[in-house]
Image 1 (cartoon, helix red, strand yellow):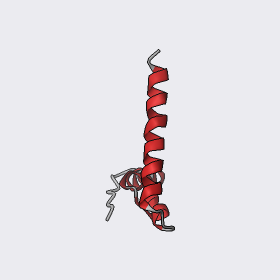
Image 2 (spheres, one colour):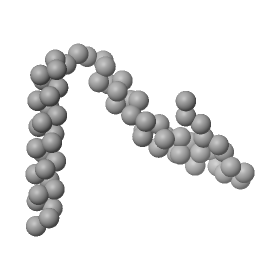
Image 3 (cartoon, rainbow, N blue to C red):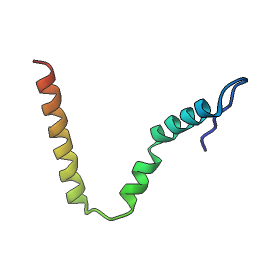
Length: 64
């Protein structure tokens, strides 16, 4: 459960923004979307490898 304490003289918008950040960091939506359909383990591993290769390429080009 996510708890956001609203401070004195704090607007609801700021508290809501903090709640949204905390909620996003927990990864609940990401997990929910992943559970909406079934991926075979072999396909899941393939996608993870593709993401890792893509990230490596991004960081390799940033250093130069």
